Image (tube, rainbow, N blue to C red):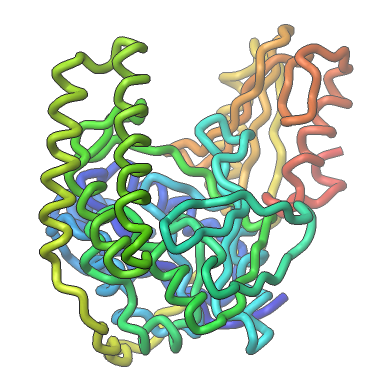
Length: 415
């Protein structure tokens, strides 16, 4: 196992409960050498003060709605060789850093990105992509069981998600970090293309998994219904002015405009937006484009060296992860068992099965336990059929096998 020092940066705004859940998940990382930097607003800081996990983190107060500037504040406080980023509405699997960081043992690797699971904890929300100078992303086929090292070319970068990415501090700080012109959107894509300009190698690490919930914020609801497109329009204007050849900009902006309009229309058809909302949202998009065009574009100054020492988080590598399982009528008893194991410092996967074919769902609770719920005969993997006969013990063993690498579960503990 690598022991490279890693700084985990979490940025949060207006989501104190999501932040608390994220930090709880980060505190369960099975990695021996990381620190935690949280950049959060007043509400987030107030929530952290009630958490013992926050006592070991570096806390930075920041109240403005600019994710790039917030991340840069986190970079300045970071003392690790590698900086890993995760959003406040996400939770990492305990093995996240154990998979994401080893590629950096090669001096040729500058960045890395993992896969992202959606709200059901099973389906992929994000896998591997490249991105061109117009911001158009394209899927890349990679082996899901191993690391793939990818080189950019003249007009395409290797795309990473801001909620599951890592970058060498030396490169990121020397390049000025994230561009503050991107207040909310395309901030990591800008970094991806800057990496490409310098020919930097990016590692795609499928087993470095993060669960992302898409929590509500100022620009979308919890159901991903848009509330405001101003910052998305502004970010497109900044991005295209910075990266896109002039002859391509109008076409690229029209494509982004159509995408946002179609998204709004789909929500209108679904009944979550009214026709007047679509008009309002697109008016906000156009206002954002105009404002974004006025934002200054200059080479960013290098970020300073950290003023604080590396603050190693007191992570537990043992005791091991455990599986607690039961049938639906045993849920209350199994929950009590899970809490006991959790209080003993273990990573707990609780599997409760009903006598149905319901699809499975995996979630990380505010109790610090990984909860899996579904039918004994139901689907829990993308390749599963909708119904399959199982014996209870065999099904539990299979589900433990499915998450064994991510949760670091010893085989004998799940059998």
